[in-house]
Length: 121
Picture 1: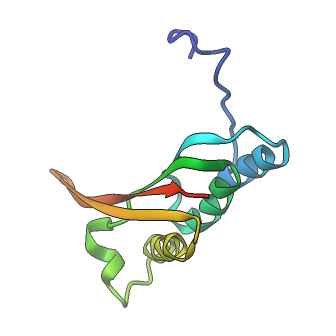
Picture 2 (picture 1 turned 90 degrees about the horizontal axis):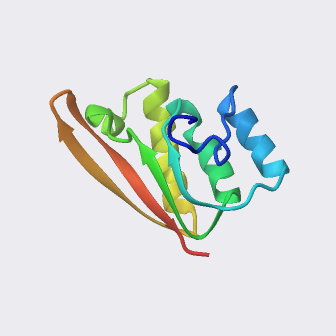
């Protein structure tokens, strides 16, 4: 951050993401314009809950790695990451303040995707 000249504009929080997010919410951090969720997939729904508390109308929320080489459509998958992504996508679709879509990506290492959501109100 120092080399980029933004050390006075950025804060690094170290620890469990849910603990850091809880601190941000309780300290009433200002709303974010962009939130990128790319952590342990089992807790994506938890991160979305906090993201909505840290968002304002117009905030963009991106959720990464939501296709997982197609594993999310395997009804027999017991993989916690897959179950977490499914829960996250369900939460996006159930949230009346979000408009969301998913986009699949294909790269050399396989295929995956991300969601983009806009906070409407």
